[in-house]
Amino acid sequence: CISMEERYTDGSKWRFLEHKGPVFAPPYEPMPDKVKFYYDGKPMKLSAPAEEVATFFAKMLDHEYTTKDIFRKNFFKDWRKEMTPEEKSKISDLNKCDFSEMSTYFKAQSEARKQMTKEEKQKIKEENERILQEYGFCIMDKHKERIGNFRIEPPGLFRGRGDHPKMGMLKRRIRPQDIIINCSKDSKIPKPPPGTKWKEVRHDNKVTWLASWTENIQGSIKYIMLNPSSRIKGEKDWQKYETARRLKKCVDRIRTQYRDDWKSKEMRIRQRAVALYFIDKLALRAGNEKEEGETADTVGCCSLRVEHIKLYPKMDDKEYVVEFDFLGKDSIRYYNKIPVEKRVFKNLQLFLENKQPEDDLFDRLNTSILNKHLQELMDGLTAKVFRTYNASITLQQQLKELTCGDDSVPAKILSYNRANRAVAILCNHQRAPPKTFEKSMQNLQTKIDDKQSQLSTARKQLKAAKSDHKASHDEKSKKAVEMKRKAVQRIEEQLMKLQMQATDREENKQIALGTSKLNYLDPRISVAWCKKYGIPIEKIYNKTQREKFAWAIDMAEKDYEF
DNA sequence: TTCAAGACTTGACAGTAATAAT
DNA sequence: ATTATTACTGTCAAGTCTTGAA
Image 1 (cartoon, rainbow, N blue to C red):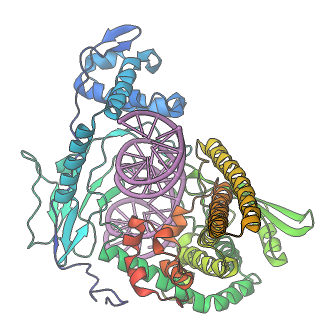
Image 2: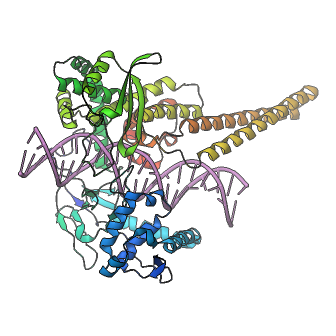
Image 3: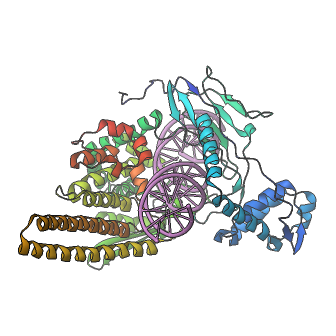
């Protein structure tokens, strides 16, 4: 068994690390000559670099964002950088560019890929498997571990989320000379592709990554790291939940404290206390400040602006209602109306005084001030621990409330999903309703209707069999009654299962359960629940999830308490 | 104290594989 | 066997938080 503390006391993450380096994106294959690009109605042969970037645009032609001004502007600017001087002087207006033949060509290609024979598909699959076996694993401290992302991201056009100022920019191709390799000195150093060199080979065992490079859009660093099933990720995950459990022990004290701070003479303390209240009660993210113009305009708690909240002294039958409306991570909208305590409300009014809509709500606060304060309240406490804690405790409490021991397995699973859903709603984990949602809902309803008529038929048959038996009283008719009874029972079960499915799906239309399940819910709660109610763990976690949570599946007994 | 760089977690979603229905 | 549907996996962007230098 591994210890709760870090494996090494000096902050090192490993002693030995050996891997084969990353897999690069396949090189660009020029268009066949018959596929033409047209400028101003006339065919024009592009140089390979310009053509490659043009194909990125052509591949996206069906997407709405290729019509957006910013996207087009950014793309065109970066595209021109790849052109020869002649191309540059000729191609001056994106609106005169016709990529449609390229687009058609790619569609045909993807159609052809779908039409491949079984053998061809099998061959590709085997090749992928070979690459996985060769590059997808590493050795870390005597263990063979799965690597998370061993393929380098291919070049393409950047599509940020939401209203991103950099959408359409060229994400450049990553070459071996861009890559920093990290491994141990005494390992076999990965070989760069023939004729190339790595940017650097280093041996830093204070970090967990195997390779890194700097991407050109934001200038941030990207990493190759291990899969969630690895020891190093698993231990970290466990640690995260243990920190959240420590918060459970002192959360009452912290709540008392911040409520007290609502009355503080100092503005910065009041702001800190109100912000913390939101983080605790609404599971808001911390909200680091962001560089303006570099990313989409999104906020979290500390970066909320005046324009993001509205105060209603009275709304319907409630008093002191705060209405939140802002774009959070990934530009997902957060909309919520909640009644708050009078003191919070009065404080908010105070914070809003003499401010413009675009001013910060908490002008005396940022995440680093808040986290410094939290650190003093509990070792290892930061804003995000509240999200983990509230998510996990909600799951545990909802499971307790919703699960009925006498329920069938599908009913219990519906309860589990509802508990999971409560968490997803708390964390505002939304998804776009699946494109085929309405249709698939209809299909399910048809199935239910069919099943219902099957049931009534079966019931009639049972009735008939019974009266038959009453008349004859022989063995054969008795058996027939039993058969029919079983048939009815079976159909009833199937019907119930379908109805459960329909309910579950309907309630889940705009809610994404995956993120909370993977990142916020202490898996030991789920494992314990499965054990307690005799639910196979496979019903809750698929294979990947079971691998990620192997530590919890090993560890938790039916009486585990978060 | 501020700032940026760095390392790591969290997040929605698209493409693909697996399974079910026809 | 083929097609439709669902489940899963990989992708890669966007957060959080820490650290170290100015």
